[in-house]
Structures are given as C-alpha cells and as structure tokens.
Image 1 (cartoon, helix red, strand yellow):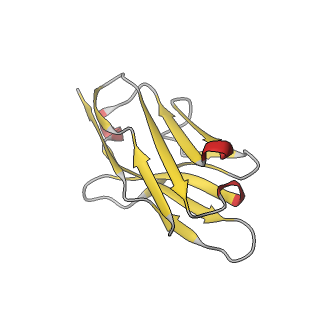
Image 2 (cartoon, helix red, strand yellow):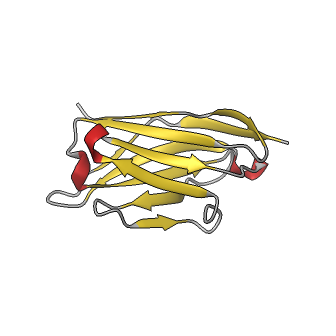
Image 3 (spheres, helix red, strand yellow):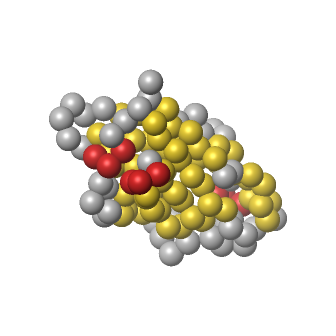
Length: 118
C-alpha cells in the first residue's frame, strides 16, 4: 500500500520558518520525482517545488530564495524548508510522488496545513 504522509505544518508568524516532511512508503522512492504543492482556499493547487531522482530542483517564483526542497533516499523522505514565511504562503501543502521510470504512476499525500499570521 502506497502512502505519502506529510508532517511539519502548523501556525507560524510572518517571517518565521517551517520544515515540512513527506515520508513515503510502498514505492521505490529513489526513482520518483518528489514535489510539494499547495492549495489555498478558493484557489487552484499549484506547484511550489520539485526535486528529481537525480537531485535537480525546480521552484515556483513565489518560492525562490525562500524555500528549499531536498530528499533523503535512505529515509524515503522529502523535505521542504520554508523560510521568511508570508501570510500568502498560508495553504494546505501536499506531497506528490511521480514515478520517472516504467509505468508513470502518481501518488498524493493528504496534506498538511500551514498558516502564517501577521
């Protein structure tokens, strides 16, 4: 059974930091691109950052210079370090796994809430 479990969300003041984790099980983690997405109330889900199996990273403009995505294949875990948080970063953050090789499979976690207050 495939599971992606996000953790690390919470309430933080503007300017603060949070580190999100996404623990994967039931997949060959090392061959998956891992992505962090977010969805604010009334808005579409959007890509925040991604990291390929080879470590290539990509960021949304809103995340550049503030967020850092990383992965630890030994722990089957992806991370999103978020610094200098702003109220507009408030959203549910979702982890996504996209299998790069063989059958293209996509899995989503259930999300973790991040709330940034003034």
